Image (spheres, protein in one colour):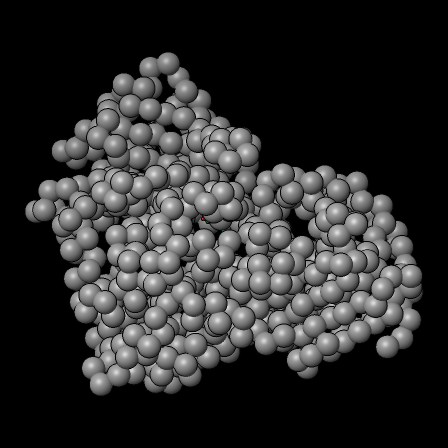
Length: 563
Ligand code: VG1
Ligand code: CO
């Protein structure tokens, strides 16, 4: 314990610290080469908290282990102390998944949390770094707060810091520091997994899951943490506690550069898992992203569960999860580009279905108001109101709970689902690192085309299919709880049969622009529901490319990733 002087350091504001879909993401070099870049953003975050709450308040801090995380945590410690924050609770070695941070914020009634991650973006010295801010509900800061952070960052002239203060991140326990006139500042290093594991024990039937994973007729699972943060959670919960054998878990040591890969659980970047699953040795497979909030579910022989279907299946089988037997099911929600598969479940179960813009932050208000139990995004995000973030491992245990109850394979459960509800064929094309000007121009031109008088009612054909435009808009959302309005959330072309073409620009990239094209089309003919989505949706993809002139305007002949 020694006295730390707080200093006011002069800085110059940056104009590019606008948080995206989830946090600020930039190349590591941007943080390293621009003086005070991270400090400015951290100060801007803390400046949004109520000064009168800081001394008694706690902030939770954790990250996905990527390069620059530990440097950033030391800065957070120094800046939080100098701003009069009373306590920081930090995962051991800085490690804590995004869902675990959300869980800990809620348990401790903290004023918020800072997560050091760029999620599924690559890491390492040449990769990305990022900073997410979550509020006291445990959820990502809503637009009102992220706008405020951005405003503050643009005018920042100085920040407060205790430059001598250093914490030991590796030893569990309390460290206390005297900081000027404030009450003693406490840093608590906590086990990264414990609180989160305790929460899952209350949600699921661990005895049933243990039987499924290690009983006499156990199934074989393969969980790929992709060198991200979820590794220690998988090892502790799935292997140690639920008894799955050690070869069930791969890439489970968080690494600063994710082994040089994209920690992104999709068919392209999790190809290793997909190939292993094709071998037929494993009944169930899953991969997670860098910060552990995304999941990809695979069945035996690599059977792929589309994330839009995944949340629908969980919804249709929600009583397999003890948590929902206790809480009841209050409502369902999906992001706008996510397929309508969940809508069909909501209709059948006579439940409210909310359609929100992309980004988990939009689910929080609905959950806080008791209107929402289960939600998902097409981008491999699934979760519930147990916390305020999407939750990769939760989704895996939800699926395993369904397998344990129904005693069927992933593929059979999926096929039964399509038979019962019909199938929403869905695909997403990502065009990554497109020239920003070209991408913006393409979107602006497309909007002009769509808003042209003659567009609605127009027919488009490809092959033997013809679709007639029924509605064309730029999606806007009015929050049913606080009436805040979010405009410009994606261009939608909706056809008379309900099929949809959606274009939007990503808000998580760090270089150039990423264009996302989403296609959703419903089919209930039992003869057609097992077809390949790429075949079924080819005419709509063709029409989307024709209307948008994407290839001509961006010079891209094909997408980087197809889901
Ligand atoms: C993407 C996904 C979105 C998700 C967001 C954050 O955003 O599309 O559904 O909520 O990433 O996920 P965008 O703007 O790039 O489309 V994570 O796991 O990167 O925090
Ligand atoms: Co993530």
